[in-house]
Amino acid sequence: MRACQGGQSLVEAALALPVVLLLAIALVDVGRMFAVSAVLANATREGAALASRDLTATASSVAQRVCDETGWTAFGDACPTDLVVSYTTDPAGDIARVDSTYTLRLLTGRVAALFGRPTVTLRAASIFPLVRTSGP
Image (cartoon, rainbow, N blue to C red):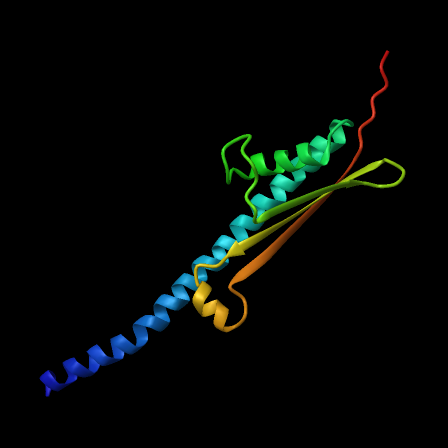
């Protein structure tokens, strides 16, 4: 009887293994989403902090600061195309707002494409008051 059950176990393992591997990769994707989301939020916060301290900051300098803080490229290099940063101030000029959007490609891309979601868009926003110092 034992010899017959060996083949059954092999068939069950062959059927279960793809499902288990897919679940494991999906779990890694969820972890990546949380990690990238945290990096994006911190980088966006750093960009807003720069904009609040430096009243001459431009949208491109703030975007470069966000890009540099992510660590996804070498310091000073151009931002990846998946990262979009916008910098605005309110009409009164008292608040600096930085919004960042990153499109994360999932490891389970082909399987996720069956459900219509091969990528996930992550967003972060940060608002800081502008710091004005008066000289002596």
